[in-house]
Image: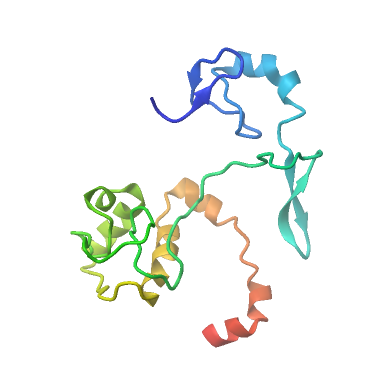
Length: 184
């Protein structure tokens, strides 16, 4: 059975979620409409607010109970920290150097991770450009990982790249930091 949940009205398995909060499942529009009066007070416990200093942030629209799930989203990009000890580029778990990717030589957990969706696009690009990673030190932070997460962002499919472009960089604020001056 694929990911999803049970319709809150009839318990039928479905992939369709409430478009507002994405935390309740419905098998169809009729069940969603019939359940709306019950669900409405719980739907969208937060809204996006725009502030000239703070930028975009979430504001509660009602009292939120301790431990209540208020938002559920999948990450847009997953990747290693800029400087990281060797990790598997398929699942991001710590990796030793025993299984380099056959295509690009980055450390992986094993065969399954070499064909993972998270790693495949960048691996294909690195192969096409003739790049092979040269990770030879285990358990030591390495700057080699610095370009992986930005590369994954640039390689997002068009619909996700559009969302990525709406993220706020806070560049003007960053330019005033000593770290920015060093990295500039």
